[in-house]
Length: 384
Image (tube, rainbow, N blue to C red; front, side, top):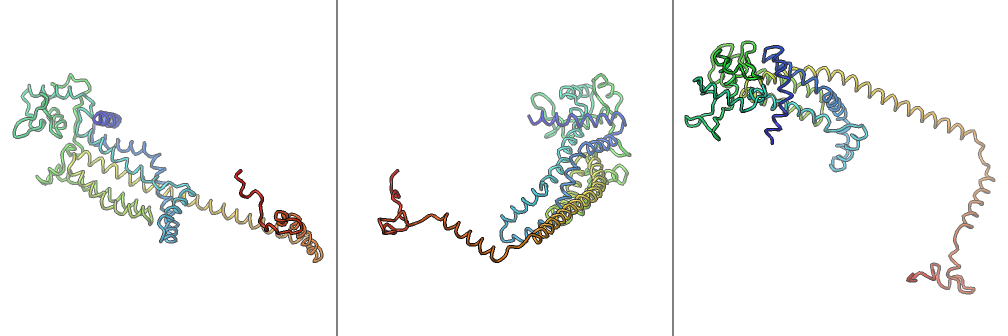
């Protein structure tokens, strides 16, 4: 089930990468254009996320005041903070949810890069195994394609298993020989993928160049890809941290500023260089986006806050003016004389006395007004 789900998740991404590769005939440019289009598609969601995060950062001062006020009552502090967020119309999680989107895209892209036949070209495993059989019959060396254990090719259910990067190596084996290209020329949808970009093999693993280092551009350039991936991620985290101000969000961004670059370097070292190139492009476009959106929303939020403050000031001014007019009206009304005040007091006292219920009648027996007591009730203990 998960394999089928992963396949359908990869379909739209593979279609985009294949489209750009067909247009540019460059695997590197195809990945960069793919990254740009994905950023543009996600921009509406990230606009909302960015605005929410910046509004949260501007509220840190008020949140800290609430926390300080209820320092001895964390539950009350949380309730007041939540109430404050509701009044301001802010979702504390609204700025975080979309920050996790690049991860599933990265996983899908890794599958597309690692399995170019079944994920990039979208051909079936039957077709792939047919290609392996054709090359086997042609006497091709498949030592880098098939999975070996104890010196023998691993066979499962009668089918030879491919190594982790067997599909990539199979593509490279075919594109490196005109004779092998002729063997697959009749396969509908087959693409002879060229992984070269700026003189670098994007299908290679940079860590292999570290362990077997030679001072050539092919080795140095591949090693630079993980370094640039980490540097661009650090720059992105630094810009995000500066825009967060103080508070929990800033502390989170500060920790990410050091952990994410290291994670980027590790991933880019151990995976095909194409994935590191995507990471560099993704971080580079994100840096540009964060800078532009940060400046835009800073101005926009300041305008909104100034507008709200102006509305509150106008409301205060209106209420003060209404109070002044009411006070003037009261001052102009004729004041009652002392004689009128005493008369009004007597009338109020008489009205209160007339409306008061007598406590004598219930307890009266003949001429004795309190024979049964002031609180006597004849049916007090009546069962009904």
